[in-house]
Image (cartoon, helix red, strand yellow):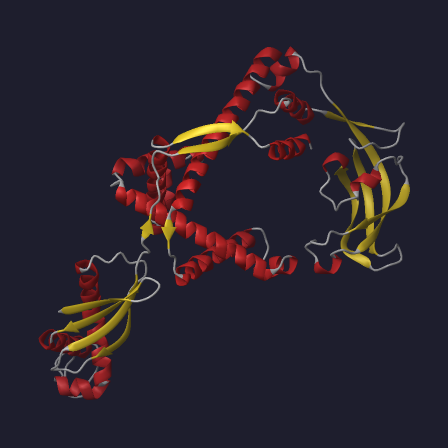
Length: 449
């Protein structure tokens, strides 16, 4: 067999394969024998019909197709192996010439892995913004704990305030109280936490200062990006009846409370545990931030020409994954693209696909350069980690997922990712620096809500 390679654009390699006439004829004759085994020809037992009879019965083209399907996989595999092609797609035949008694000529194409030119990925010093433990972090945790164990008491002697929980009847109309009724915009005996409302902006705030059994109207405007196309940016009026007001009564934070809600005996012990937890969270955030920044720096310095066809395949896969996640939430692609521009969403998916491909190529390149091997023990360790995360034994993990080839491939990729990460962290220096002022202020603002 003779093979000639030609590099085309976008990492496509054309394979011109010549299979000797003898081998091509043997493949043809074998195809005739196979076909004769499952066809009925008058006057002949199965498998006994002469070649000429089989050719008349099924046609020469059908026999050639059978011969090609038998001989090409091994021929293509040999071409790829002998030429050490690192392929990322299955080869496909673009043309062939097959005349029995002559050499078989096959032209096939295959897409190969793009070549990555690495920048420096060792000996770097990389600055990473350090996370902080909020000054009020301990008190905030205590307040949350007290809120979780608060009791609700009826209020009858004052108007509602912005920390109350109210019970309301409501009915919504477009434009004015005499306008079109909003479908799904009504409720009876609905309990609403004013401070933590998920209603449209301005709704909960207008329930403040109202008295028990008050009936009143509030005016709101639906957000411009509201999920219901008909209601986007529309003004609306809601008729409200205030049925009940309740306020939270927080328990006293003392040793007795601590013993009741935790395994600790004193306030001091609980505070110390919260402080240790917050410190541990900070260390985890810093570790992940360092790993991400080191990897991002290495990826940014790498040069690689990624074919558009490769991006399109990855984007199509990401889109399908996204659709499946939407379906799990009871949503569809059409519903989402009504709420946001479809072209913008597709652009985001395409950008994510490009980044994922580059990340993967860089990981594979480092693994190759560093001669990283995946051992059986690495897989076993990863299975144990998954089991611990889902409170399953390793045997249960294997029983549930082990027969899925994608799961096995994913495990190997995770192990490879971990090993590359460890090499990068061991061979580069990280310097933690204070977070930028605007980021810190934004974070504190979010945490204060």
